[in-house]
Length: 125
Image: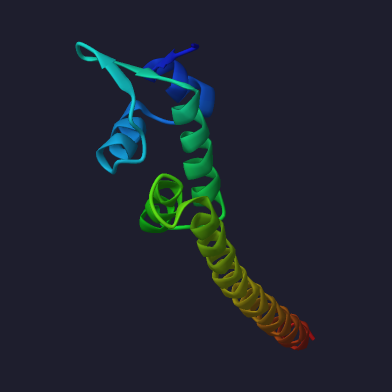
């Protein structure tokens, strides 16, 4: 069985040692220990990938804990997948609203800039 040290895992995923320890404190990662040395197996790598993917798409750590831990607890994988589908829908709705808000702000800025250019041109006459 292949294992990785905390340093190797941190380097492979460009995260800090502190981040990995934090995920361990949250119960997201469960490395094997020999003395004070942590060894991460394939299961931990997969869990870390899921954590980082969840963070990348905007899930909170609390949501990620729920999603990742559901796999091992009732309602199991089916419940995990349904919860994830629901959370993706919520996140998508939020992002779509943010996109509309950004588009509106960009339109406002364009109008302000145009008015400023017009005023500047009038001052230059």
